[in-house]
Image (tube, rainbow, N blue to C red; front, side, top):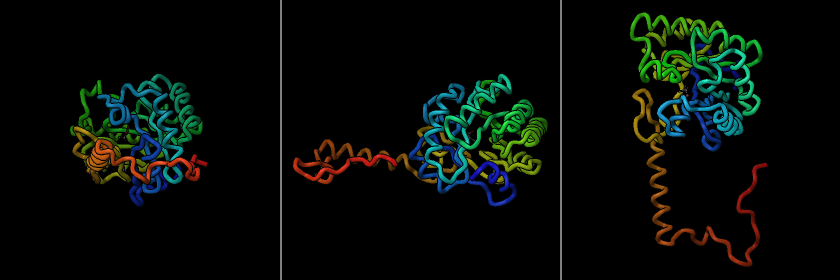
Length: 274
Ligand code: KIV
């Protein structure tokens, strides 16, 4: 999937998107989804921070590279973290170019509406596909005073629609609509030529994205109300580790299948990747 194929799905079969932060998870998700986002949500779900503000470009390069190497099917998009693009369009270009060059991703995502439209156009005109992000913008959490649903009042709703129009006109190939009331998500989807990808924004969008640890039941603690849990991998992991611990303590692991005896034929323990 390329950014342009994602864009061509406007109004068609809903786009299936998920976040990914590491190589083995991305290998499993890649054949099943249209788009993998290396989101700066990794600051919270991988590094345990209380916001995305501490995420650096170096962190996004490292995780972006691990995910992009795993992808043969999905379009891989990497987030521009807080502070790496808001200063000027030139700063945004340098950061985005670094993500493309050093990770092998197909596109970048940045948060912002009308105030970022000029920057998005600058990047797109210079060959960098951009995914927009309107509605609830987690990088603005200090100003917003928390993660709260957007578009409840007429003026807030109008703001999200105007942001969507601006990001769309600037050339974004798709637009994440996060944390808005359904009516606003539906209107944003109607006004944008690019597909909208909803998270906490209802099924009126052209596609959906979730944070994978939330979907898989790996998140410890609070899971947002909009994040449906499709599995309980956290419990499965705890069960596997409890069994391992029990077998180690009882000296049942390693067993005969997992040991090498003197004089046995040599065989590689691990096969390096070609
Ligand atoms: O950082 C992220 O994971 C995101 C998604 C929630 C859309 O921006």
